[in-house]
Length: 222
Image: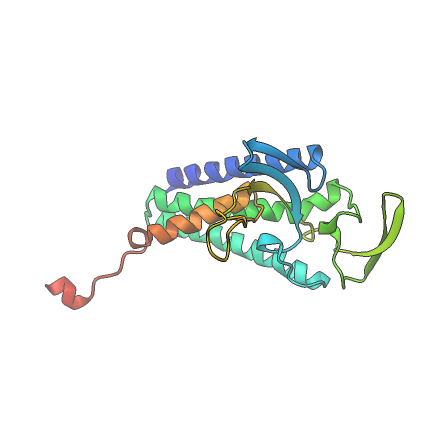
């Protein structure tokens, strides 16, 4: 049990470290909206920040909306740690534990952004991802010599945005009905998102192996 859990938590630590190093590099080296080719023109770095849930979806303009989202993430992380330890005690396979370790690393990686980044990086009122109409937090943006009022997102512990940077810059062929010429996957994501998605996809693919059905009494007798 301890050996398996050690392997899982080493994986979680390595992924968390890599996720945070990438995010810190992007925040320190890129301007908001700046892009740079990573693998040709089809896989690029594109710096934005996500103020809410997946794909930039906000959970509301009030402080409690954002706080509720961060608390939910924290509860989910606690549950994942508990579940991993419980399954390890039941002698679950290392593969099974590693898959849930991926999800744990992703959830923790994005929570770290929300918890701490606002204390180390200034909030620029002119960045669109820092603006949240309806928040009631008024500020003035000075851009190219022009000044205009904006409303900002809430700032502080567990209220920060998540840093995203990876993007597939590939479009559907123009002859494809309805979506021709549009991006196949326009979302901008990070390593933590990739860990969560990979873990969930593996669970769906391997669910029969991970969650085998218990045989009924009649089937056992046969």
